[in-house]
Image (tube, rainbow over all chains, first blue to last red; front, side, top):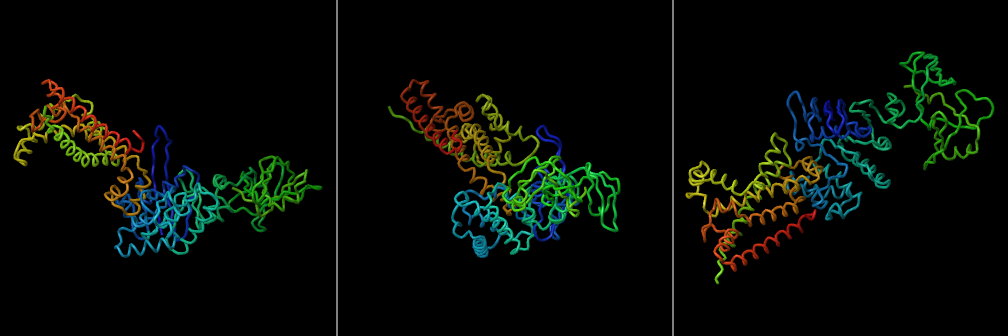
Amino acid sequence: MISARLRKTFPTRPDSAPFSLELEFQAAAGVTVLFGPSGSGKTLTLDLIAGFMRADEGRILLDDEILFDRAAGVHLAPQARNCGYVFQNYALFPHMTLRQNLEFAAERRPRLERHRRVNEMLEKFRLVDAAGRRPHEVSGGQRQRCSIARALIGEPKLLLFDEPAQGLDAPLRAEFYEVLRQVRADFETPMLLVTHDLDECFELGEEMLVLRHGRLVQNGTPAAIFEQPANVDVARLLGIFNLIPAEIRSLDPGRNTSKVQMGEHELDGPYFPGHLKGDRVTVCVRPERLTALARNGKPGVNQIPAQLERTIERPQWMRLEFAGGIAVDLTRPDYERVRDTKDWMIEFPRESLRVL
Amino acid sequence: MQIDWFPLWLSLRVAFVSTAVAFVVGLWLAYILANREFHGKEVLDAAITLPLVLPPTVLGYYLLVLLAGNSPLGKLWENIFGSPLVFTWKAAVVAALLHSLPLLVKSARAALESVDRSLERAARNLGASEWRLFWRVTVPLARRSVLAAVALAFARSLGDFGVTLMVAGNIPGRTQTAAVAIYDAYEAGNTMVARTLVLVISAIALLILTLANRLNPRGT
């Protein structure tokens, strides 16, 4: 269990804008994902926890050990923190074999135990055959597994990952997810993983912290955050396309309904707690929750006519972009049924509507 | 005519000792300059570099003031070793050091700074002490550049003239290094001796610099 309260300020420099990080969070066992765009302070957060940098203010507690406490003047050296760190480029020592890399990390153990532990890790991470080779002589997957094994060999109380799948091709990425799931099953170490990849959040994250401009803007499970982003900024970070200005016309908590005016159309939605009639809001609907269909006759409830501007092919689905900036994702079979349509309608299922 | 090889032998000995001292002190200084942040860091770097640009007479003057028998340092030396430092071959080592040290510090600092910082972070993260990090990660990775710097320092130690003349003097058979002997021989009209020593010194220096170039990954 890690709990951290951090503040770190960087003044304006000739080559950089001022930046400040102000963050408070806790992470228990399992994978917690730090998600945010580049420059949001994700890697900085890892560096402060690992002790590569010193926060201006705050406190870092790992289990019951204080790693950093500004008020008490505690700042443990990186060597004393017992946090495994998997670097973005793996940072394997290029002049050592994979085995030597692991031995370097286990050097504080007694000789016999070290030997046993290194062999155990080589086996567990399927590195036995490559153990005698140097990092540049082995495959990307082996390098990756070696860096994780190296971080785990000292039995850290926390494992930090800095964009571990960044720049990997699809097979390696899948392999990495597999390895990480295995690690999660075999070791009880809490893991903190930095990424700006949404797929990764869903693949790996049990908890998700959304960072923006050095602030925590939302936390929860990836599914919950995706279902109800805290605000328009989070929705944009999550890549949700349909953000449409609207006004709440009526709200009925008893029947769990509402009416929302969107341009010239009125849509039925669920009850929106915390909002008032007359509120100017942003309607947020994920493209895959919408349906596009052929128009015949008068549009029904929650259906609005729309002009198709273009279609974009994706491996698993088709994205239809309509005038007014509304995007609809259809599965390929669904698309095949309506592909020849000239006159379109978009249907907004009642339960899909969210307002921010 | 008989050639006295003592000056050449002395020069090599001076160069070896001075390079050894420069390696230990210089690597330590380079480590400080590459890894620590402190006030006056660049002043320290400039002070170390200063001997490369000052006239030998200025350096010789400083050394004489600093190390002469009646100076505190000179007295300290005499108390420890029982004989004065100036006008001995050890003074020639100090003179050679003035030029080899800055060369070594400059190149070694650049070499140490060129090592990937994330590797050093990784070592710290894995619990390695700063000492182990330095000798097991930083130095091995910067090995070729550091060796090139050592070779350069050695070559430079071999060739000092002015400062050596001022603080070690020109005592044949005791403090007369090759560079000084060449001047001496030329003045005395022993062109054959001068020419031979010139060629030998040039050959050795060329050999060492070629070696340094081949060691240096950047090729310079």
